[in-house]
Length: 244
Image (cartoon, rainbow, N blue to C red; front, side, top):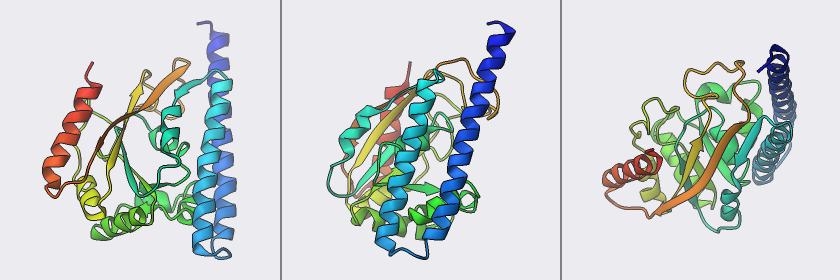
């Protein structure tokens, strides 16, 4: 690759990141203003739908620019599914949550507490009634409640981006939530064919393009009273699916 092409690729990445940041900041300011004015149910619906549409629009722009090739249409099959559902995915890159919620207008994320205070994410997350992960039993209670309301809870059982291939050891909680709410766990297998934004990759370091990521629906697991045994089987399933 010539130096000119390298500079062009890096410049395009910065433009896309600037677009994402500006879009996120504008929505979060507006969401903060709307939050006290709207009824809770209406605010939640708007918050989740706007996040899904905004990220879906961003991925379409990145695809049109030749920077990203995202295959995620398989998740559209979950749109009209009635009742609560846990959507469980592996976590190879920093982009994963944004890719999943872009396809799930009823999706609810569990977020780190510091992100709920982030100027680019916090206002929209609060309007959408996303769940903080720092409140222990309260997080489980809130997760069960949102599932009983018929929402789709997005969880990454690894708890952080994958460090040890094919998958990190799973954190407890996901199968307990499924048991308490009596909802199934729909697995989503994320296959990244690029090192971009994997653990340790700097945000502003331009990757080889196009960045290719595929999301596909995997096996669905019914809730079980022995949630610890189910957690082990869930981890084994992902490991088998992702093993080269």
